Length: 126
Image (cartoon, rainbow, N blue to C red; front, side, top):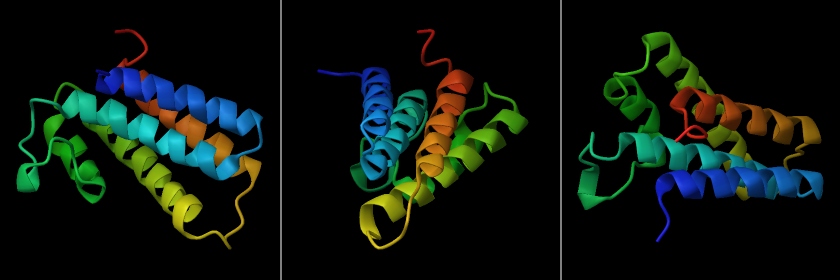
């Protein structure tokens, strides 16, 4: 059984590999889920989710970050909210709007955003 941290790191590795292989949409998708898993792990035990869920709804993630990751500075929480919001938007485009053009720079930006999140949450250091 995997942990949220393990899922996060695996998804980030997949995002890097997919980017190298030119699979931009899949890379963006994995970047988002790397961030989502890392944040879900940090929120674990701090939040009771709606409808008996075991993890946050995607749309609610910014609110959970702001109100439940109190060990992080307010500035850091806002940085995380901006990064995960950009990732979510890119993932939705990548997954559901195939006619929308996505270039390599967008996939690279997604990896930067996930790295920002993992660094702030110290996921690599655990």
